[in-house]
Image 1 (cartoon, rainbow, N blue to C red):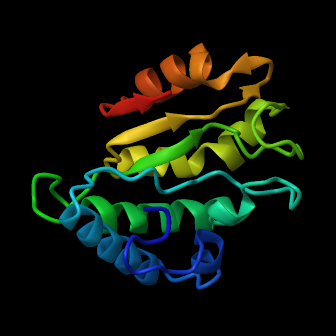
Image 2 (cartoon, rainbow, N blue to C red; image 1 turned 45 degrees about the vertical axis):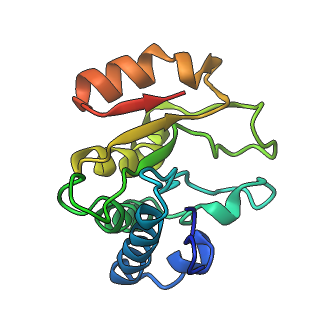
Length: 175
């Protein structure tokens, strides 16, 4: 359910070009209704990786290069997928991915080591994830790569210090 299920919408990068949160929320709502009617209760969306290098193989799945736009559109998508109550018919769990710096300034797809200084991490790569956590995202998926020489799915800094302790994330972590 990346950009629709039965009804197919433009790729996330194309939807982001609208700069219209209501459009992305409505597309996510339609996708959630269609997914739920087919027995699907979870989507691995929104992808909130910041795309900085056009050679990166997953740029089409992103919401672009602007951290403000990305966090604004991601929250709109969450509202469409999850609604205000996951127990209600037609609502499905969303997953903010890939935590974090999966889209670092590297040309490789998954196996790279993204180097990010603390300022860049906090100002570029984490804001959309923070907004998703604040908005009640049900799940967060770890990135496949390493960040600053540490595997993201085993990063004490990212998972324990930031996601769980600092942000008090109460959902599920997907690795």
